[in-house]
Image (cartoon, rainbow, N blue to C red; front, side, top):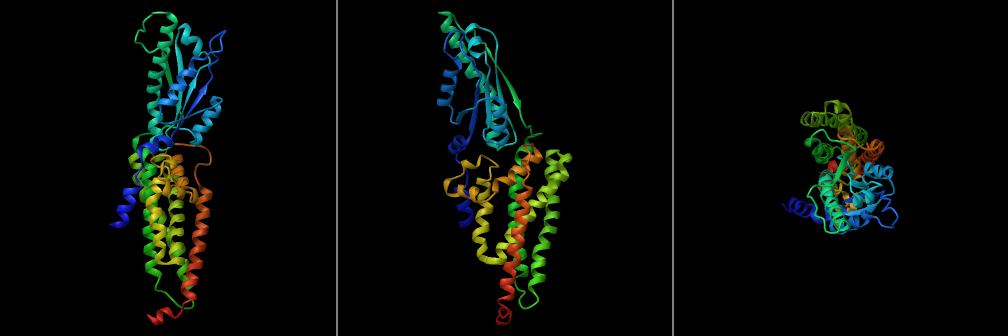
Length: 351
């Protein structure tokens, strides 16, 4: 009760921190009013920067905005056209573009999805006011003079695909922790000469086999609920590799530290949901657990699942990290098993 109440009452995300961790990009191509050093868009952007709870950064061009959105540096980008000031004052249609994506956290995806309507209303009101001032007593018609064109960089097939990375990541961690603990308990009683190698081999090979079967079941559920059967084998291999890697690392910690490894493994399993970036950017996590994301590659697992299910930048699937974890876990298992089996051969007789 203590463990679960502490982690579940302190790990939830704060709405204010979530908003502050989201960044919007602005590409202002406005060339200004002809014959005057005035850009009508500057005042609108300044007002937007002051009123929005998100961070707003200026980006030089659309190509840089696309790259930043693809990498997850920004949740969405607002692209102001070059003729904005001229059309705002002289009349005519204006198209402000919004670049968003659905391959980031759920919070960032929701912000990007709703940004089009908000920008249309804000820019239209500002342009109507500018035209009213220049018309010297005219009245706005109430129509929205600014159209917003939305382009989605990576599109999720359905709502289930948006939540699937979070579900898969949590299932991977909790299953790996429980499996590693159970295998350690089942093999810890073996002591004496000649036992270390068979025990270490069992602790190394069995998790890889179990991970393949367990991740196959998980992939069937995810593919069935998201209708992404075309990504089945890629998703299965990713889940298999990730589960086996984490299971070996957990098993290695138990082999080396025995039961005190729970003090390391259990907090990571439950706190990774807050710092992995599945529900909100990693920066939204509480300060006291946010450092975990800097020490451990928790975010890479979620990014890998998102890349397969939704899309993302090249190299988004953390194959190298997973293989490194496999080697580290196997090394910990063999070292820990040798220490506790070969170095204490008389423990079994004493008990």
